[in-house]
Structures are given as structure tokens and as C-alpha cells.
Length: 287
Image 1 (cartoon, rainbow, N blue to C red):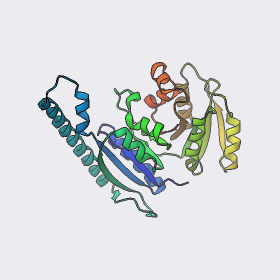
Image 2: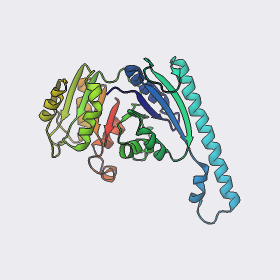
Image 3: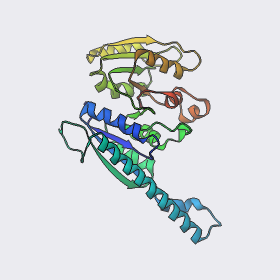
Image 4: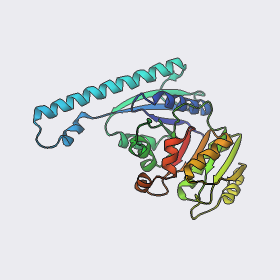
């Protein structure tokens, strides 16, 4: 299935331009539409968090400050979007069928970001999420985890530096889990157009389920030739996986996310966490 609609949640401007560039690269590749979505904080949500001991005037002041900060951020994000699409000669219009070129639009709504993004992502072929800021804990990236856990759709994590190409050399991180099987399905349109496809697996990464040769045979039924590389894990499986992808010249890595619990990965680390924090290429993840 071709990719026709992309969702791009924009919380701020720090990594926004790289994510916009990534989303537009994908949109041009597929003649797709990008909906840039900014979710404003609802100042009324501050009141229940204020706690006891605060007067009505103090709570009202907090709500007013939250509203101003939310408005300023929304204005900055909208201005960044308009500057970007103007500089890139992107046609700004609502999504329409069979346009034949990439288009984009901007929407700002008020509410809880994780709820709205997850809901909107359910009718997007792909959600592009900005890379977490260098000092930000990826476990708190609300938009990313909302899409992964509550949309049923794939998410593409944009690298901090926008790539020149996406999807010409595709790697599949395979470990036999249901999550990695979902990632294969999401990557199918990309693999059918890619110059080269490689399956990456490792003894310490494989779980109970089909092995890499079984996946290669399955892809062959779909007309996709994929070679297999069993990478060696020296300490961190995530680091070894990224190194193997880099050796291939990969410009799209597709993988399952959180086959172990999110809490376990938060405490102990894990492949998903390492890739989120360290990947310098676009990574498409599925749950």
C-alpha cells in the first residue's frame, strides 16, 4: 500500500525543522500529504495539579501564565512551519486524493497531546516524530509513545540531522517477535521500491519465533530479495544493530519496539531505548 498521509506532531521548534525536512522527504517520495499538528496545553488542566493551599487568585494566575506560554509556543511553531514550507516551495493545502505532488497543512488544537496524537495517528499511514532533544529522556516523549502504544500504526523517528534520502537501502531488525512482524508489514511498501534490503539478526537478539531465513523466504513470495547478516553483539545489542545498519549504508531501519516491557527498558535499558537515543538514521518502529 502506498503512503498517502503523514502526521507530524510538533511540540516545539528545537528539533522541528529536521523533522519537517524528514517528513517532506517522505512526502515527495510518495506524493503524500503532511499534516503538521501542534497540540496546545489546556490551561484548565493546571487547576487539578495546583494542589491544596493555593488561593483562587493564585490558581488563576497559574492558568493565565500557562495560557500565555502555550500561545507563545503555538505561535513559534506555526511561524517555523510557514517559514519552512515557504523556503521549500511546498504547496500548502488540505489533503486531497491524486494530487500528484507533496502537500502540507498545519493544524493547532487544544488538549492532551498523547491522546490527540494517538487518535489522529490511527488514520495516518505514518507518523513522523522529531528526535528527542539531547538532554531529554526518551521515556517521556509523549507523542512517540502515544503512537507506539495506542494507534496501531507505525512511527518514524526523525534523526537530529535530516537525511538526504530515505528508503533506498532498507534494513529489517528481525528477532521473531510479533512486534518485528508488524515492522515487516509497515516496511513492505518501502522494500518493494528499495534498491537493496537486508535482514539484521543476532543470536542474542532472537526470541521464540521464526528465524531470519524464514523471513527471507516470506519476503521472496512478495518479490523482495533480502540478504541476511547475522551481526555479532559485543555488549550492547542496540549498538551492534546500529553498527550493522551503518555498514550497509542503511537509510531506513524498520524494527519492532518494546518486545520487553517499557518499564523494564526504562530501568535496565534495552534495544529500543538504545536505538531511540543513538540512531543517526530514520528509524521506523511498530508495536
